[in-house]
Figure (tube, one colour):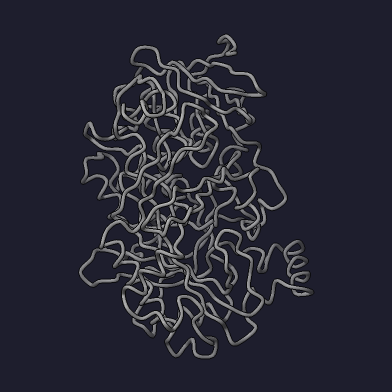
Length: 538
């Protein structure tokens, strides 16, 4: 039974993840406005969370991961592919690889050219600078005093230096700041860490803000629907401790539940494509066919090699060496436990006629059979993740039933176009070319996957279909745009419903060229300004 409404807030934020933490902190800066942050998960506290290398434990832990899966699809040989989403305050910054990539300037200029006024690179750059506390070499476009720490990977093993040198031998330059003037080239990743510890969005934004009396944070509050009155979002209904409760929004309901759960919640609220809602047995409250469409994600293959020398994580994370690494970390906050999912980076163009890199590489001096569990091989190995930066393929995410506890159906539609297929094939060929350079001769034993038998384009594509995974960058499912086929306008207001905003990865009209965390932080920073401006005018 739903409890009677007893509470009201100026702003209700749904989702305490990456974007939600930013919004809660920024909107509560105005002490005249009351803010409620509702998070279905817990506080986001656990032994492995601050330890960067703990991500492999967290990716399979249902306490911190919603553990979504795709539907079987023919293009990926009817495999179900894991779609991790962070659960708890901090969201996916609790479990991600901590890699910080803004994307290319043309990504955001492309948004503006599609009619998303105010979202060009020159428009969003001040928000990137506002959020960053970057401590490395960089020009004036980098932020130094923001709440979110960004630092270069500190571990620089000899095999990573050899990989970067091999890229140079293959004709690709070294780039010390891929978040600077140009993305092209190879070097070391930047990560959101401070003193060897993962810093989540909750650490950076929410924890300092929680002392404010006008901010209430409620964990274990699973939002079931947005409550509509006429053409306005009046509030939300959520479930906590087995009871349903309603809460009123005086100014705005802001959905920041992410690219999977935001469209799912809209559909549960009766907002979406009439045919989808009818099939799920949900009454239509507001027709908006774009909800759940335009699903985009980065597809990634992982190539790996056996290594001749004992210089990889495979052998240095066993026995007494692991004990020594643990001791080093807890005494100094240094060493291999500070490593996440990427050590050395590469951004390349598969063709000379394109503007900006279209493939990204993730080099790690480790090899493993299962991408989800990442259980390391016993012999030395190395891996290069190969991902297409700007996929053409589009998928969907839609509600299955009216039951809010039933996960939505996720259909990414990976490798649906010839362009996506060819880019992946060319990217893998370039990775092999780099590893075949002389700088890697002392380390390279042989290629394990896809292996020497893989030569033709059909061979490469078959490997991608059989082994490719997502790298957890779902976005686009409530896309921003100027026309009626979009879900939110460039001010991030839902079309046709007053007082309802969306501020998370789902609003991206196209995916950014790199890991999406930085762009989500930027979107939330900008959204907070848009919402505050609207609140002052109302």
